[in-house]
Amino acid sequence: MRGGFLAAAIDRRRFLFAASALGLGLAPAPRAGAAAGAKLPPATDLRSDGRLAATRRLPIVILFSLPGCPYCEIVRRSHLAPMLRDPLQSRRAVIREIDISGDHGVVGFAGEPTTHARIARAHEVRAAPVVDFWDGAGTPIAGPLVGMLLADFYSAYLEAALATAESKLR
Figure 1 (cartoon, one colour):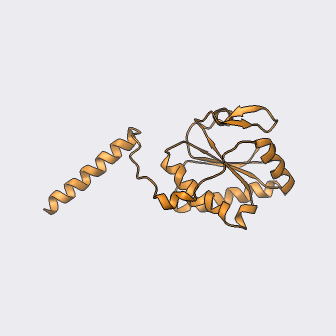
Figure 2 (spheres, rainbow, N blue to C red):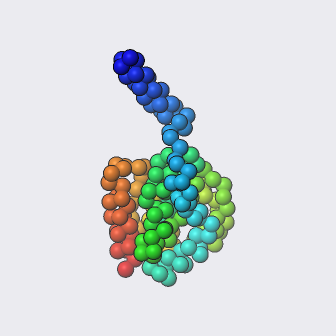
């Protein structure tokens, strides 16, 4: 009986590994309650966001994401959404999300019409998640966080990049 359980567990692991390698999206779905508060404002008017950031001397933090990306959901739910909900942390940055495959309309930093996908291409973002740090003109001011990195240290990486961005605006 025990050997059967172990064999089934190994087979399930192999199946899930193979499915993820093929991009079949079989990663566990986030819990409904946990994801409920995990929305980030989408980028819609970067010119307005840039003015706000410049006036307040704040960095703009952009999450480049893809729909259905489990790592994007972790970054959103566990790191960026809690920053928005915390009264002190929410004053540290303007946080927006860009769907790298999306044709959502956006006003660019110079007032030009563009899309989420064009912005991602302009910043050479081809995979997700990527968290980038910009000044009010849309210029990168700290190195981007590419991928999920080490989950146990992600908060520290995010904090260090945000501190770097903040220091360049002072």
